[in-house]
Image (cartoon, rainbow, N blue to C red; front, side, top):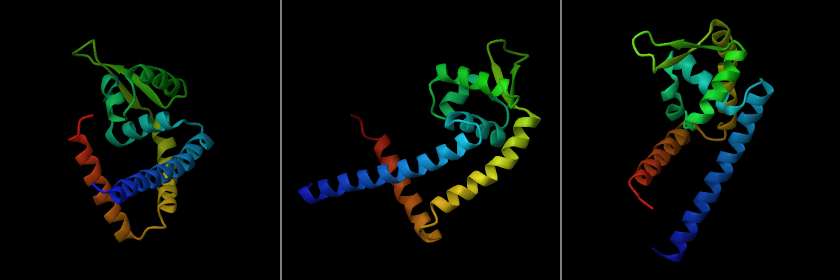
Length: 148
């Protein structure tokens, strides 16, 4: 590897980090304006699109530590957006299920979130978005194979 290749990798890291930060700041503000934090939105979005989920699995699906999930689930339950449901066949398992109120909330909120993401990424053409998806996926998958 040459000095130029190293500099190019550093530049790519900086550009990716800044783009990620800009998108996260905008989406986090959107969630906050709608009374949620990013984790609460992620839990609601998972339940909205995938249905009832075991509490023990939610953390892995949204990349959150399991200890934090209980707190988030409690907050969403207090707001009436989800219910805990015991598994009748295994007392160790509790499910989270979106309520009709949570469903109505997400039916109104999620399309606005999609629209915001469209606006935030609209500097790229559809073809450029496809290229970015392909390249970032390639990079992400290759990193999983490295060990540090």
